[in-house]
Length: 350
Picture (cartoon, rainbow, N blue to C red):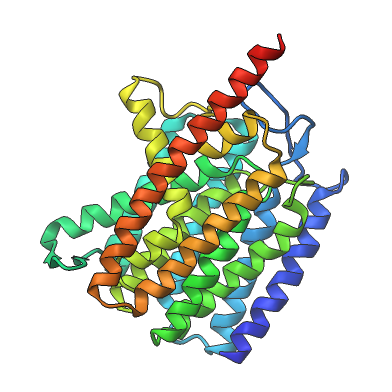
């Protein structure tokens, strides 16, 4: 495990160097994200930082597999990274050429299906505190596929503010790796820490005010890997079903709630918008830094709750899940209150 952590540190340095290069106007693969009416940034900014994340991660995984494991026992991890690379290639193509939504979504679906069927990754049962465990049977396979598709896309939806998606990745995968290590799954832990290292090197340049964005080439593969490693951790009994959901709940709740609201209003959910809760805070006058700090506090709180959940009895687990459900309702109402207050303030000034 010590060698794996050292490798994660080297991956961090590689990602830091690659991201710095991609920030340069002379970078060969440099693409600029031009501000528009749906953007939160005001100046053209490079959006290929995900290449440094994905590239350094691929190097780290190959070294881990060939040097530290001598080609053994990590075939599944290589499958996961290979699938993420496919998503990354298509996402980079999309960043350059604006592919039709159907093409991107089709690749996400095919990759999720191939991963679940090819590795046997499925949700076999779900446990509810105080209510017991319930076997899903055959429905576990399509549920796993849908989960991977949604995680791939929601990460993309939530990558719209400086330091946000990168911070969620570092914290989420960091805690997931720690729990996998405690749960006796060192391979899963090392892969999580490699992702942390690759994203951490990028995040230094992505903190407000961001010098570079990760783009689809970073957000989509990271979302896919978040889904894959969550399912793998549950399947290997390294974590309970609700633990990864708590870890990534700041993204899952915001993206899912916003999607459902837009569906109910009959809007085109595949079109870019500025209706996520974090976007609404920025548009209400909060700075990027203030908003991302608030989100980091929320991420740390959810991760801490996941740690407590993993060691608690059934009653405490039930209270934690119910408490977080109530808290997210309160937070959603709080954002609406901030918007209303800001709107009143603006009208009062006119």
